[in-house]
Image (tube, rainbow, N blue to C red):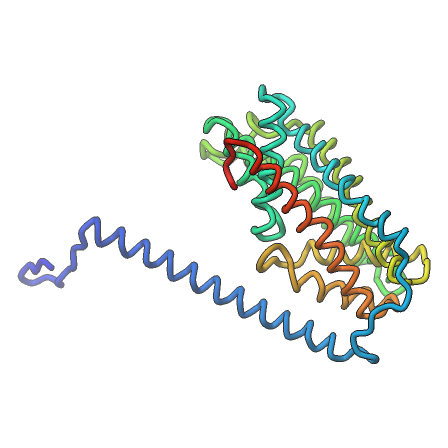
Length: 324
């Protein structure tokens, strides 16, 4: 501390002290954010427990399980990930890389995605298979692919809500939902043109690394096919557990996925959050609570956990890899 006569004493910190202070501040924020997430997680878990505890007949398993439909339900998993593979191939179409690296980067993305919020961290596993100069492009375009899935899910969720509650929604609310979708798709296709106006090098170079609008439209189409796969698969798993066939269920499932997509993610994707939302929405369609939980859990295991286990095993067979 230096003191000048007639002046206010000032404390001069060394560069090491400042660095330590910055690190501790970041650590404090990380811990605080983790505690906040854990608190929200506990609140959602408590809400889910209350819903389960309120089941009229307790947690009773369905009497009839259709095993033929169960096999059909599981067969949708490879279709789901094949469509995601096509999205990845569209993103790296201009890159000169061998088939092995392309395949293993995709598998690494599956593994890294499962431990990140909403599985959005798939770019983490992918980027290490590319030179540093290409990583920015891979990260941004993977996020564009994720954004295409987000837009499709939100759009069909809002559309399903508008149909199911058409008599309860005012004209202004219809207009508001349409405006939200128009803004979302506008940002998806033209957001980079707006960001390029920002006088920072990172944003000025976006148009040089982002996939073209034609490829963005292709990613959107593939995301739509993948989303239909999700909806049909969940519809089938409900039939597996003896739910009565009803075409309107497709709308309820689409609404459920839209709400899950819009909901914040806590730990390991949207575990607990997903089940709570599924219960809240599908019980309105007259489906029994235990069946909803069984369907949600089965879908999670087949679509997320099983692919991660398979991807991990395939990566371990490779001598050089980045995640396992």
